View 1 (cartoon, rainbow, N blue to C red):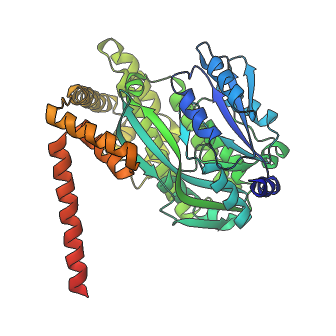
View 2: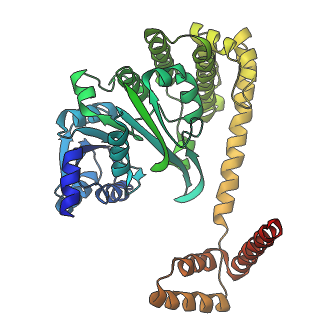
View 3: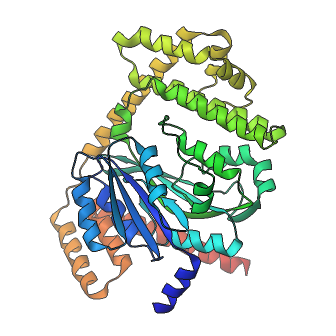
Length: 429
């Protein structure tokens, strides 16, 4: 352990910044994942952004558990201000960001630091898992990795910038701050901060400023960050008036970055238009969450404002690709067809309601085990007390959640699959 501490001292300290606002429901899970890091040379800055729930109490409980934790209380000014305060207070050589309702792999910090030092890069970007929850249960998940590039890729500034727009579009890894390791001196010496006048796209704007300073960057495919969407919350989220304005401002910053770096050409232009079309489509789509009979004219006015924005018109018109099921936006932008766009949003609104109802019905289905299943479950649990086997543990979970019949069927299927592979290999021999 002593040798590991000396090695980590040489590698440098990491400041992990966690902005917190009314996160008591998820905060414990987040902090537990952070304090268990295999890289010990860290400080954990909990920026309590004026929380009014029990978040501060939870922070203080964890502060008693881990001396590396430092609590910084500030008045509520939003996540960007909280992160900027964290950068200002950080004493580490590197900066890592974690959101208060997400979790990280126990070896995330170590993997990021080791990669940055091994390849002498100025930033490391890792893979993420986007987990969609409904009523506390995992509905689905999707992994965002740099598979477009490869498994573990180190790019020079030139290589990175020449393919920048495509990397942004195909990896979905460049926008946010939480799957990255930053060099603190890059941020502080160049006064790079999160813009506090924006509440969407501000992460990407900071990253664009940082990207300009890079000599090289590393992408690793390891899934180290777990980003949680809670569908019950997102389904009730309404369209905010400044959503489109913030996203357009972010896209303009993106275009300015390409021009400033002298890479506004070829595929960078083509993929920029595709990315812009996707962002604008999302803005229009989000209006469907606000649809109500009494709001029809207000929504139509906002549709017109989006369709009639000069940049939106130009970018969508030049996009060679539009997100699936949103091809109609090209027609609407070209002719300012507010009525047709509103009808399409009504369709999407109805589809979302049907999907929500379907999910609710599925969640109401409960499995009630019989006596025999309970006996098997009890036997497996007692066996696992002695054997401590992960296979028995998974088998127990399957019996409890799916029943003996389904569990047995999956075992038979797995056995047949392995048997078929075995015979196929022998045939080839």
